[in-house]
Length: 203
Ligand SMILES: C[S@@+](CC[C@H](N)C(=O)[O-])C[C@H]1O[C@@H](n2cnc3c(N)ncnc32)[C@H](O)[C@@H]1O
Image (cartoon, rainbow, N blue to C red; front, side):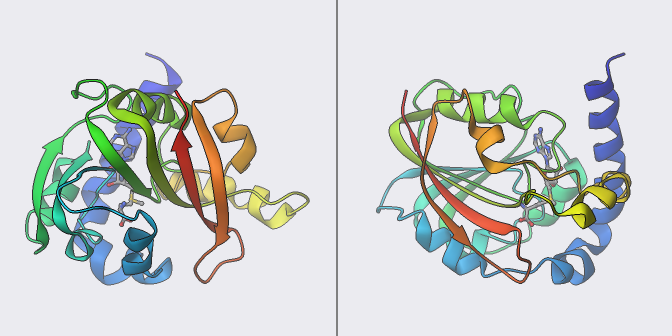
């Protein structure tokens, strides 16, 4: 049994617990302007959007006039997402973002908030996202990243992994060798290392 398989099972176990308190407590710790994140995706009427790691569906109320496929590998998180209202058509599926059950070039836009840092294999997710998204499609990533010479971020990594919050990466290191090209990096939210990244699928 590989380390990534064990990590996946650990994350599934943790999010089974977090699902109960995510909206009322966990989200409050890392809260950010979700409406603004969706606005940055610049979604046009009728487009197909993929949200990876949709969790309890806290972004869902901010979509409209499009179809959103929300995937997550945690059944308990998805069950909470089913209760959220939206003006978009929402389709929720239990799926591992490392191997998605979608055809190539299925989506116009993709969004993922606080997921790459949690997942044991974020580079694989970026690869899959490139496959299922159309050429020149846009990906919005909201996450916390490593900052050079910030010892504090390094020291707390083991605790964050234990809490199921994963670990931060350097933005450029994460994107390197993927088809995604960075268009813009925008400081976002309360914490200095929280960034919104706009990427283009250059495949
Ligand atoms: C910190 S929560 C973020 C949830 C939501 N995006 C938000 O902004 O509130 C991380 C979510 O990513 C999901 N996740 C992590 N790795 C995943 C993967 N490989 N495939 C599908 N879901 C994944 C977890 O189950 C969890 O629901």
